[in-house]
Image 1 (cartoon, rainbow, N blue to C red):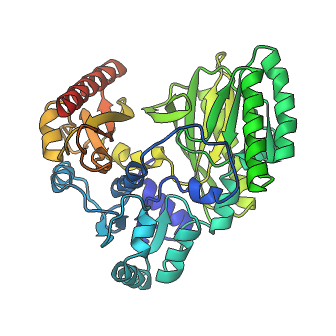
Image 2 (image 1 turned 90 degrees about the vertical axis):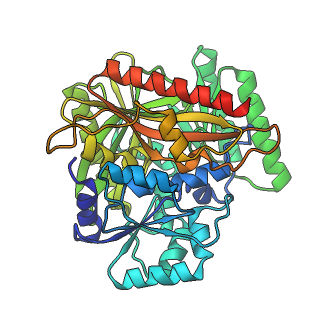
Length: 463
């Protein structure tokens, strides 16, 4: 896995030395979904301001020869700490006007001077690496002349639908949970009738939005009455808006021992390279982090490598090249469901790779984690550093930087993204980091201690 970024550059631009402009337009799925209805709104809400600040993850993917587009400059104390760790960062380019409710792409497009600067970078051979490409990123590429690392928006949209994932798994014979897809209201009513057979036998069903992400667009259904209510909501919405289209799936909610995420890269030549597999931590379908390495045997890893090759060849034939992440599962008996869904874009696990390469030593284990915070006032990085004294990463001794232990913060912007608290209403934030330790016992202890101190800070801040 050494020097992933240089391998990616070589695969998709033709040279390992190509300078990149990195753009973290997270939750691009909302743009891909467009006006095609998914699941009716079920009350799930995540702050757009918080999600839009996830673009800071790109800061630790690029190298010193690259450039990163951010909505706002990072906390200077955070940058100083990264420099102390010896991390060479890309050149930071910030939009002149930062609107918390807009994506980073929208902020950049609204800044003529920054667009002009990017045009100059294009003339010097830079390429644009997006989290995922929609019409907005295509517009940015067109206005600046930056070539896109991946394919066009239409291709990205097509291969990132969960409907595409199910059909590809069926076409290639890869194991998946029993399920159905629907692209019209009538089709959804028909598959709902089929799914009742699973419910009647005591099994559980999950309804999915074809472009749902981060736990949004997913509903677990355990009885026929709930499924009838859902079908009724879909039907009434269609009647109200005179819209028959939908993009929905119904699948069996199968028993599992573990969730997995594996990544491979498709070169412009069509060559497929397996990058890694990690154990994904999820809660009710919401991504919470990764355990590294995954607890798998050689046979299980070999099956995932084979699936990556099969999927990569199909994606390549359908016009996609670049990074692909696939969600998978281990069943209670150790068998593999190799494709739950395909995410043909950068994934959360992608943004951890450079830190792994720099600091994860032989035999060590890691945990990528997010910690919730409730803040009654802003939390500067200098204060966070004091709060987590003794728990932050300390490099190992010797010429290799591996062997150290502690937490490396890999996104601080999301801590204060929701803005200052107003009156008696605290705001929600998240701290993202990669924990490294010599064994799982030390790793779990480190995780508990960090979570405890952050919980205490939330209580102090809101009291």
